[in-house]
Length: 279
Image 1: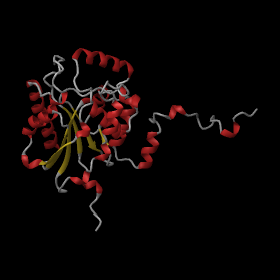
Image 2 (image 1 turned 30 degrees about the vertical axis):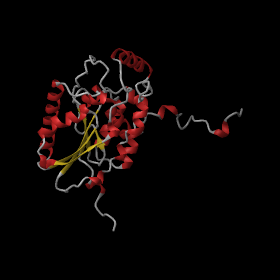
Image 3 (image 1 turned 90 degrees about the vertical axis):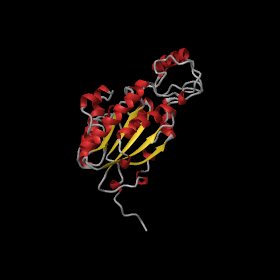
Image 4 (image 1 turned 135 degrees about the vertical axis):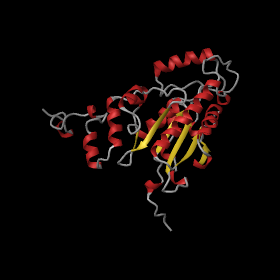
C-alpha cells in the first residue's frame, strides 16, 4: 500500500552544518606522522564543541518546546570528538539517532603530510583554484563535490512524530560544508571560490522558509551572509527562498539575479541563425 504521508512532514525544520572544533595540530606543529583522520581535538577544541552544543540547543529551545535531532557525523576523530563533547548539551530523549557518514569527511590531502610541504601546496592551491586543485595522492574540491550529495539524504528514514520539530545536524569539515552548500543551492564554481570556510565549531543553519524551501536567510542576517562570502546575488536568492512567493513570482524575481543572463543578448538585438552570414 502506498505511503500517503505528506512528503514535507519528513523534512527537518532545519539542517545545521557544524564544523569540528580545533584539532591538536591545527597550529601546524604536527610532525606529519599521525594520519589526519585520527587527530584528536585540542583542549580548546573540546570547549568549543561544548559551547556549540549549548548554542544549538538554545536555538532549538527558542523555536519549539518539543524538538528532536538526528545527526550525521564524519568518521574523523576530530568530528566524532566534537559530537561527543557537544552531545552533553542535548537530553537523550531528544535524539532520534546518529549515523557515521563517510561522504561528509574531510578533503583527502594524502596519507601522511609534511607540514612544510603542505603549506607550500596550499599556497599553490590558493593561486590555482580551491575547487580544481588536486593534492598529490589526494582529492580536489571537485572530487569532494562528487561524493558530497545533499540530495542523497533520505528524509523518510527518520521516525518522526508530527508534533515534534525535526532537526538534522551534520558534523563535518570546512570545505565539505562549503561543497554541501554549493551542491544544495546549485552555486557555480566561481561563487564557491568566494566562500569563506567556517571557523572552528562555527555553524550554518539552513531553515525551511514559508514557501517550503531551505534558506540561510531565515536564521542568518544579510551582514552575516556577506561576511561568509555570499555575493549580493546569492543573498538575494537566499531571501527569495525564505519567502512564501508562488513559483511564478519566484521565477519573475529570479530573472534579476540569474548569473548567466549576461551571456546572452537582449531580445531585440539577438541574431538568429538564419541571419548569420547574410548581407
